[in-house]
Amino acid sequence: MIYLYSILSFVIILLFLKSLSLKLNLIDKPNYRKKHFGNIPLIGGLVIYFNILVFSFFIQTSDYMTNILLTSIILILLGALDDSVELGIVFRLIAQLVCCLIVAGSGLIISNVGDYMFLSNIQLGILSIIFTVFCVIGLTNSFNFIDGVDGLSSGLALISIITIFFIAFLNNTIVYLIDFEFLILFSLTLILFIFFNTTNILKIFLGDSGSIFLGFFISWILIMTSQDENQIIHPVLTIWCVALPVFDIISVILRRLLRKINPFKPDRRHIHHILIELGFSNIMTTILILILSIVLNCFGLLIFYLSGPFPTLISFVLLLVLYVIFMINLSRMVNSN
Image (cartoon, rainbow, N blue to C red; front, side, top):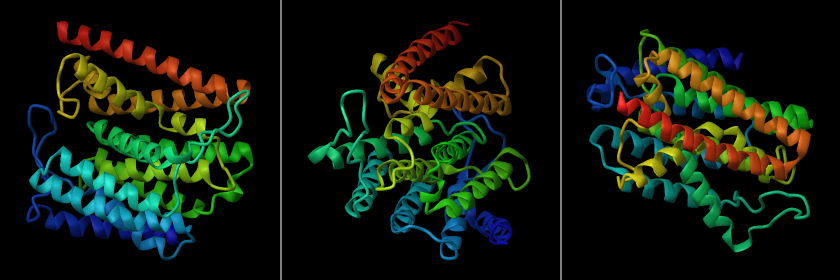
């Protein structure tokens, strides 16, 4: 029943924030990078966050999850402010760093990266916090970077959660997932957002606040499920749960650096931009990328269960290199036409 209430709550919060979006200047206007039609409210992240926050009080959640949710309000509110007045990348990175340190301070960190062949349970020691912050900020921005087509960033977040569920089911560790009901609520909320984001019914966008929140949230979920005492998934599988966003951000940053361009300066070198330039519609672009994400995730799982952690890690690196090479050539082909 609580899930039915969450649907009603989502719509109420959406209507309320939509009525305030113009006054708060949370409106996305078309420009040379943004090809949508009309002014669209940038309230998706706010709607998603406040909807799951309200129901977190009625669903069993772990202490770590509570801390993540409460800390995320900093990112959501400052992100909304950035959407409104454009405070810039430095401001966003500082906010992300502060939030990372707050959550890490609660004890949730990447302390080990798993076992690989003759190396068992590799501990990071004093590098744990630095490595955790690097991973969380990197993945947070990967979801922000790839948020350029309706339903894409939110769809990738949904696929990540479903992949975690699937791995936990295969490993018979679903019983250790304390936040299972809450993650179901989160998934339902994402589906609701995707509906309103991809249709013209009360259309809304995530905004930077939304995509940053999704990346931040998914990052910590992956850490929780791979680092807890009752390990739900192997650490190497966490990177496969978010393979496409990671591939895209590394590919884009490398290509910008090769061109001696600020790696954080927005452009149209992302995979979704290239597919659109090739003639695919927005919705078809989203579908193709989400299918590719599912294929990558399944490939990683297949390698893991057939060959073990080390071949899985090597396969990730090799596929990343191939992806970067392919995107460089595809981008050149598009720009030459």
